Length: 296
Image 1 (cartoon, rainbow, N blue to C red):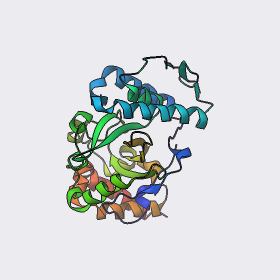
Image 2 (cartoon, rainbow, N blue to C red):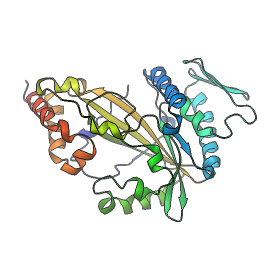
Image 3 (tube, one colour):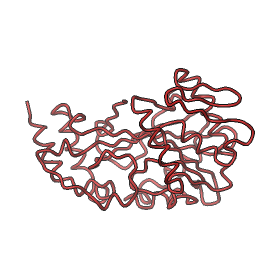
Image 4 (cartoon, one colour):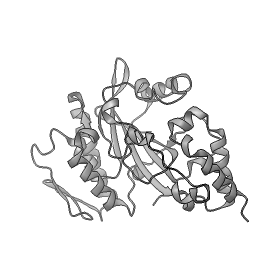
């Protein structure tokens, strides 16, 4: 598993925090691959209307995303994916997906979402700016795809404290100027009271009780590795979200790490702590971290 520690990158601030992306590293695969694909498959079969939605105008962009993945995956991970003109095979899960005429024609992004651990959001330019026109989001963090579909970026990010005042103009400018040859990535983090990947909005209303002496075992670091790239043919923008969850007791492995996380939690505005779901668990969490920070 990749070990991302965004809270070690410096003081907290509301910013995009973009880094150049090597397209060879576009998609990430780890030991949780088979288990997460099984969870994605179950969600797509049992709760499809929640996790896979699209507007009709998105079909051409969806098809381009799938085509890019079908080229990338067998070349980057030949031990996992095998492609022929008729099908693509996942050699780990044993799945075989038909690529024949008409197969997945109405839902190419769904097939893309069945092949990888990343969630996928497709955005297209409109008079209101970039709008979310399709998505396969099996592992949301307190949001619902149906609430965002068709909306422009300012409304998508409306619940984020400070976004409109501090970041909206920067984000709009970035989307307009994003180049095909310059994809980027960023990392977003939070602390959660369950390792579950599928977290619809109602989960925010059910915080668990934490014991300060055991908070490290009852809290997880949830990191989203997000990539953004412009599609060369349609000029749409693809946003991917790869979610990692680690128990905090494993993350905070040194006093210095504990001190850094204490500092980030102190810097986090109350409104942002509430938005991230940290507010209900912050007090016992800080007590545990401060004790770890002073350990020899």
